[in-house]
Length: 101
Image 1 (spheres, rainbow, N blue to C red):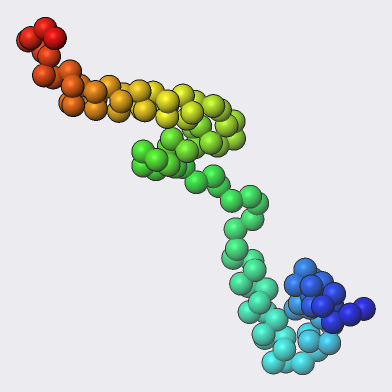
Image 2 (image 1 turned 60 degrees about the vertical axis):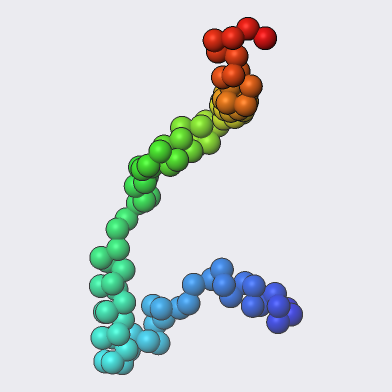
C-alpha cells in the first residue's frame, strides 16, 4: 500500500485508545480511566436541531430547508416589480400627480 493510501485510511480509523497493552500498567490504566470518564460525559444520540433565529435565518429555514420551494424566485420578481414602480414614481409619475400630460 502506498504512503498516500495509508495516510488517507489513517484518518478514517480511530486511534487505538483501548489497546490491551495500554491497560496493564498503572499509569496507563489511570490515563485510560480519564479517557473513559471523558467519553462517558459526552451526550448520546443525534444532536438536537438548532432553531433558526432572525429574519434571514427563519426565511432560509422555511424556503431552503428540508422542503425547498420556488417561492424565493417569486419574491425576487415581486421585489423587482416593486422597486421598478418606486423608481418610476420618483423619477416620472410624481410630477404628473395633479397635472395632466
